[in-house]
Length: 197
Image 1 (cartoon, rainbow, N blue to C red):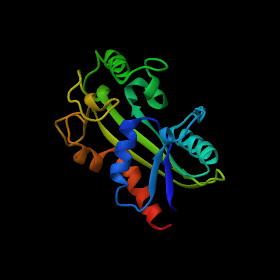
Image 2: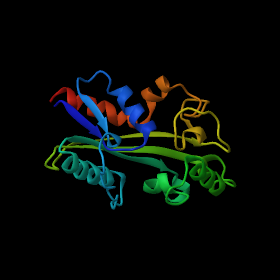
Image 3: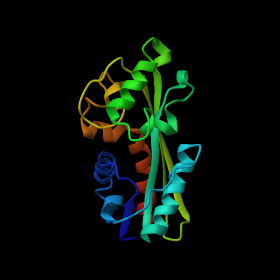
């Protein structure tokens, strides 16, 4: 296994995954390394379904093994929203700041357990034929703050304080985040799988 394509154009996510996979002897690429790839529609109703859809489609398109993930933030008091719509919570093409602002607005009158939230990550690896070789998942529970703190990370990181910490993911160092994040939990399973290939 000499090449693994990370199926995202999100450079923050690419950097995070590359840092965690640095010890694996594999050439890592991202979707931005390929020209004219069509965007794959995430038509699943769960994170796991969307990760599998992306892994299969991009594996066939790039003729490579592909690692795809679908992840986002679930707030139980909001019925699980933003959930699979995390990246476009404020509309298609919405910025991180716009998505964050919408979530904070929805929670402006919420207190205590109503501000509980969970970052969820589902990952899938597919081979060039489109067959799923392995799936993994991770979760990180915490609380949504009332305003943003910190400039590290991306997405909802500046408004999420993980359980056991007093700072947001936007304030914690990348080293700490990479040890505790939902993505790191899933990636540790991926690393174990890749090490057996």
